[in-house]
Structure formats: C-alpha cells, structure tokens
Image 1: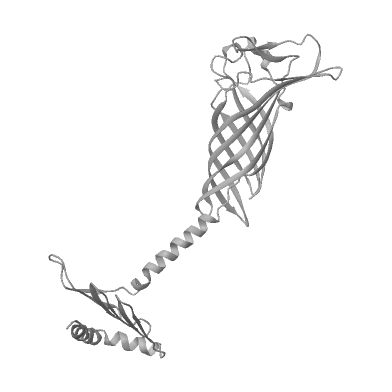
Image 2: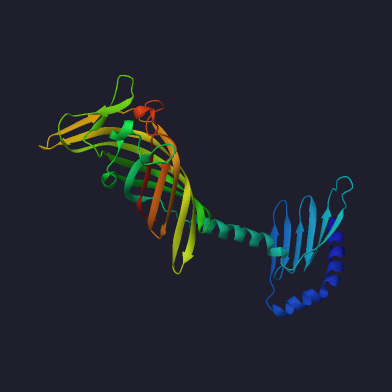
Length: 317
C-alpha cells in the first residue's frame, strides 16, 4: 500500500514539475539512475538529482525538481501525514555552501600569523607613580644612566589565534632581561627589614648596575593593515611576568668586579600593558608595568618605582 501511494503522488509531482524537468533534460543529455538499498533506507536518484525517492523506516521522501513531499509513516499529534515543500533554486546546495564558507573562514583564521616570536633590543627605566623620571632628592641614588640602561628579550614561543585573515590574538613566552645602570658612584642593598637603601662602596667605581630576569607572557590583539604587497602591524594588550633571577654588579677602576645575587625585594610577579607597531617583521615596541619594581613598602625611601621599556622588535612569522 505504501509503494502504491508513492507512485500515485510521484505521478502528480511529475505532472506539476513537468516543465522544469523537461528544461533540465535539454541541458543534460546524459541521465543516470542510482539505486541505494540498505536494511533501513531505499533511495532512488534519477538524472542530476531531478528525481529523488527515499523510502525510510519513518517516512517516504520524494523530490522532483524544486518540489518535494514527505509522507510520515506514523505522524504524532496534529502533525500532517503529507508535508509539501518547495525548494529555492540554491537550497539544495545551501548546506554545502555553508560548510564551504565555514571551511574558508577557518582557513583564513588558520593563516593568521602574529608578531611576537623573535628578539627585542631597547632601553629601560622606571618612573614614579605620577609618571615622572625626576626622582625625589632622598632617592637620587636610584637615578639611572638612560643611555646605558638597556633590555634584551628573546621571545622563543608564539601562539596565534586568528579571528580573521589579518585580525587575531597573539600570545607566547619570552625571556625579559633588564639592566639598570646607576648614574652615581653607588649601588643598592636591602637592610634588615628588606627595604632598599643606598650602598656606598667607598671607592671610585667604573660601572655599577643591577639586573633582573623575568619570564613574560603577553596577550595582544593584533590588526594587520595591507600596504601594497606587505602589511603594517598594530598590536596591544596585557602582559604578565614572573621573576627568575636578579643580581647587582660593581666594577672598580682597577678592573676588579663584585657581584651579589640577591632578590632585592623585587616583586615576584608583575603585570602591565604592552604595544607594538611596525612594518612586516620590524616593530617599535613599548611596555609599561603597573606593578612597582619593588614589593610594597620595600622600595627606596618608601617610594614605588614603575619599570618601562621601549625598543625595537625583530620577529619571525
């Protein structure tokens, strides 16, 4: 009985869609018939999907041209047993098109490459809470030789998370080495309470500095603007760091050296903001830390000093 019903409805649909089928046949002289038979579904496809009959356990589906009919074996409630449907011209390929677009977008996202991995050279310093480089008189010994206080970073790991072909997030790992070269004939030390104070060597120094080594991790949003056959990079975001090492070094006039490995009451963790702008793999970069260099209440003279860096980055895509 079910098969008779299918044939009857199929005849009506063929008559209704006759003109469309005839047109399609003129454009396609090679017709094929495919029959798929499993224990659950019988499917017949004629021509270039001009006629499709699918006999399943719960329903029979018939499609002729742009019109289709579903016959439910056991409809529930007020659900109609016969369900007619008219397809748009492109509806048959809509799912494939959607999947294709998704794959294309995924491909564009996967091709996004940020600019973090590589090396950086620059200068570092610190400022007071009001962003001044002029230190109070009582901590003048913390003044730096700006031209000789430098930083060197090796960003050895990068992960790019593309949102589009030229927009995405960039993160990774890097080593951040800072050299703070004192301008005066002094160095620093911490007293019995861990507070940073002046260290006077009592002799003339050729060089005096203290250094820090941090592992830093950024999370930047990067936008790449096409420029001819290249692009301009603009990226910014938060950055965090954890201290690995610190020491001080003094070089006397006669060449003797004195080193001290100490934690100098430095903050173990710090965070701030970083940004960079550049052309292709050369970028100007800057970082300002919102965490003071020294632990709360341990800074020189009780004053918080906030480190910052500015320099050039040479990245590898």
